[in-house]
Amino acid sequence: MQTALDNVVALLDLEAIEVNIFRGRSPDDDRQRIFGGQVAGQALVAAARTVEHGSVHSLHAYFLRAGDPRAPVLYDVDRIRDGRSFTTRRVVAIQHGRAIFQLAASFHVAENGYQHLEPMPEVPAPETLESRAERLRAANPDRDHPDRMMALDIRYVTTSPLDRRGPLPPTQRVWMRANGTLGDDPVLHTCLLTYASDLTLLDTTLAPHGTSAAHPGIMMASLDHAMWFHGPFRADEWLLYDQHTPAASGARGLATGRVFTRDGRLVASVVQEGLIRPVS
Image 1 (cartoon, rainbow, N blue to C red):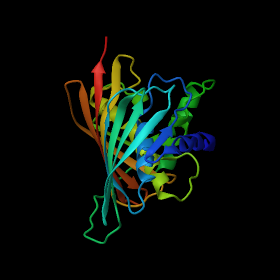
Image 2 (cartoon, one colour):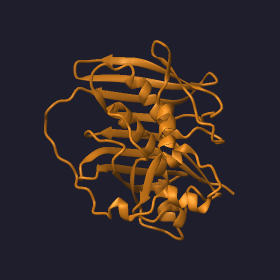
Image 3 (cartoon, helix red, strand yellow):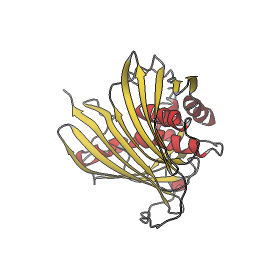
Image 4 (cartoon, helix red, strand yellow):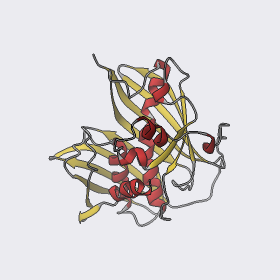
């Protein structure tokens, strides 16, 4: 598991090839397109590498085209603004001469101010729940599962998508943490949470319909993704990802998420819209 995590962390360690230009790679796991959380995480790394002061407090991203996992991704960073309190960056991910993803990220120097947080819902402790990795290995003991499936310890509080047999409430909750240990760089923890936030969120939109991304008759893809970071956290400690879907229409589904530390602090909010197109 630590090896799988180390491999994901290595994906986030971009190569600087010119001022404001970075190159990222993809794992060799036989996918038709690049996992969206990977591109979002790499783009945030590229933005952060050009910022001297402050930490990211928000990001807004659009997935424009499917990424080719056989080709490297170039990340072109535009230094939009360097202010005393706020710094803004725009990042465009490019493959084969075309933009496949764009991200705007804002960084903020820490300040004192008003503070309030929503309370965390009451849920079972993660130790009482079965891990997704354990289930995958039990179901397919001879299969090599992709690092993105093994690098994170994910435990479903609500019904797992693999077990959906009918319509469910529009809510999905999971405990998650890095499946190993990470260093102390807060940028790494933020980028890994950005990576992880795309793993389960869109599947929430299918819970009311009793199906999931594992169903062969559904085409799913992230369209846009936004995150706000409210406080410090460690991605290698338990985080509760409380997800909800308010609406789906026109072959699109909307999902929101709240990320809490185990002691109940709300540290991030997430919103994503994605394609959920039935195919025959």
